[in-house]
Image (cartoon, rainbow, N blue to C red; front, top):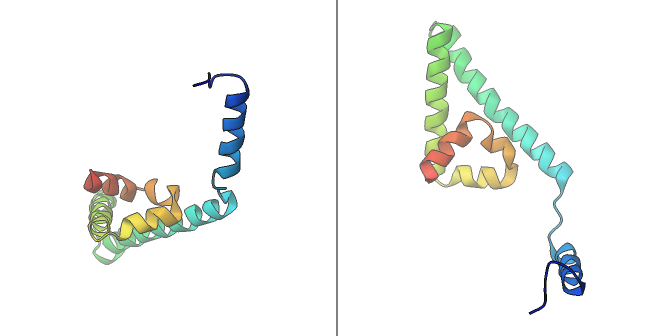
Length: 108
């Protein structure tokens, strides 16, 4: 075995990795992450508005209920195998909101 830290073998290996590694469509990933994360946040805002304006709960109670609902929905979707597909499609857009936290708890 040759020394991979320097020399020709390391350069050949780096070239091979560069050539064979799949290219990541950054722009597409950003758009997907943005719109999926935005939809998740819109759902959360809709739940908050429902509790605050329809049920006439206070701001604190509405915020707490929204967190509980979002965690429940993410846990349910994870259990059904849906949230993982959303995560593969949207990347960070699905893991940044509180639902990503719930997804990680259910998967562990």
